[in-house]
Length: 523
Image 1 (cartoon, one colour):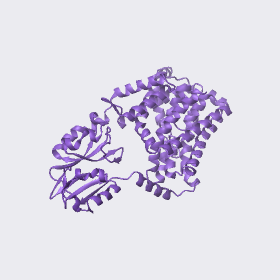
Image 2 (cartoon, one colour):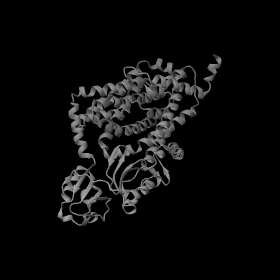
Image 3 (tube, helix red, strand yellow):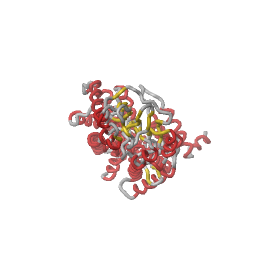
Image 4 (cartoon, helix red, strand yellow):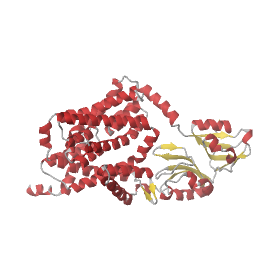
């Protein structure tokens, strides 16, 4: 027995015992709800109470890995969401976070809490591990006690509130779904492909360049069939009356093509022996961040990009569209040139799973330096740098990106290291803290979870007239609650909640980290 107890004096042994037990407990579901990886902090609190300690350097390693990978993942979505959906959803996220912070501060003074406990309660009530990382960075490991107390209801309370909100607001989800679909159809029209026969006498014998086809219609011609042979079009391709052409564009673009070319037809345009259409994967660093205009595919390879697929969304291939690592391009050209196009873009799926450690290490170094010389601190500096680098995408030969698998692995590794250490550190004062504050901790955690959601929901519906499905996703994202998103997904066939969640989540994550930093400055 003594030999077994001595094993726990070794940090690495205690660390992995806590991780293993945490994962086992995290998989247990009660009423369909589980703690998942967050169960590690509860195991660590118990171990810490009995005197088990882990080297603090593991906590710092865990923090920087977790925060950096979160920033790299959220960067493009963070800046794109500000640009596309901007003011409304960003302001909802800000309202939710600021109200939560206000409740935490008021309760801190009312109940005379330690600021570290209040910061932990704030992070736990919003189920935000980055928030906890920021809190422990500013206030120390005592914050994890508040986090551990508030987190369970933070998970359960968000799920219950989101499930009950439609009934509380007496909303018709089917009608909300119809309204959202109509709005999305007008704002982000889908790309469609349509075949046309040239019947307009005025364009007979003119080239696509002379017609300024793309400028006039905002559509792309992917193939032209004259007689029995289909060819890859270029600005010099001549259209003759009776030709068949295949066009890719929005429904609005298709209507413009009708006016210019003629009526659509159901007749197919078969691929000729020398013509090919392929999906090409971008894995060559040299083309990343370049525009289609810069690549000049038409002149160099007689090739046409008909659409860009990025993160499951089809994007119009405008000349100014920048290529990103991992994009899938639908390319039409001759079979001989297709091999050259493959070589240009890489088209190597294996490279998507490769992990280049240098950008990760360099990015973390920059983040730590920024944090040291600004008010942002370790977590804030690493997060801001990761967001900016992810947005930049490429600097010279360096790609500021990671594959999904690599990002997930490093993020999870950093998270479990961090939770294990802060939990054991906080466990040493667990009993004393509970005896000092008692039930008040649970009550405050409940208030920080519910009050911000109630106020944000009322403002969203009465002032912004936000669609309820979008509101549900925004609340889940604002509370950084993946279980909350999972709970509302079965309520609708649309992906409105998922889109709102993806938009609000990175904004809320960044805001909460910064708010915790500000609380430390004024405490």
